[in-house]
Image (tube, rainbow, N blue to C red):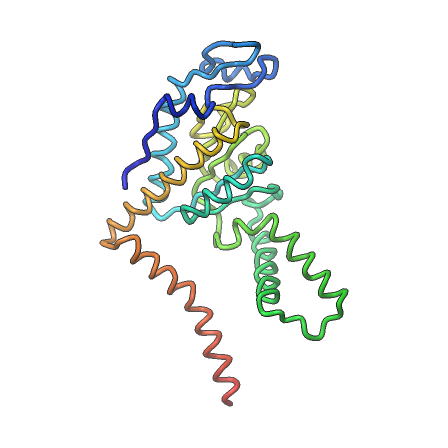
Length: 266
C-alpha cells in the first residue's frame, strides 16, 4: 500500500471548503480563510491540501512504529463514521462522550474497562445464576452504560500515541489531556477553531457528513499504510500479522480453559 492520495476536486465535492458563519469565526484561522460567500467563510483548500498531507504522513509514521491512534468525535453526525473507520484499520475510538481523565487518569479508566469486560463475559455466557431478576436488569443496564463510553477503547491496553479529532472546540478536554501527556493531535479545525491548539491542524468543514467521511477514510488508509510498512519491515505479510494477533488474543482464553479443565479433573 501507499500513502492515500486525494485531489482538490475531491475536497470540493466533500464540502471541505465550507466554514462557519462569519460571525462565529476565530481570528486565528484568518490565514486559512479564502473569503466569504453569503456570510459563510470559505476555507482556502490550497492551504488545507499540504496540511492534510502532512497530517496523513504523521499518522502513517505512528502506525509504522507500532503506535495506536485514537479517533475522537462525539458529535452526532460523526459517531458512526468514526466507529467504522477506526474499526476498519484496527484502531480505537471515542464517539459518545469524553470522560474527564480518560487519558490523564488511565488507571481509573482501566478499572471501568475491566468491569465492562467482566460484564460482557457474563452477558456472553448468560452467567446470571444466583442473581435476582432486578439484579440482572441492573447489571445489564450498567454494562450498556459502560459500553457506550468505553467500547471503543476497551482493547487499547494503555494510552494512545496519537489522537485524531474532529471538531477541536467540542473536544477541547481530550486535546488538553493529550497536550498534558505530550500526545500529538491531528485536528480538523473549522473557521471557529484555534489551529494553534493541535500539532497537526487541518483547516476544513467539521460538520458535513461527506467531509467527515472524507477525513476518516484518509486517516484510516494512512494507518493501514503504516501497518503495512511495519509488517514489511518485520518480513511479514499483513495476513501473517493478523494470524499472530489472533493467536495472541486467544492465548489467555486457552490458558483459562485449560486451567478450568485441570481443576475439574482433580
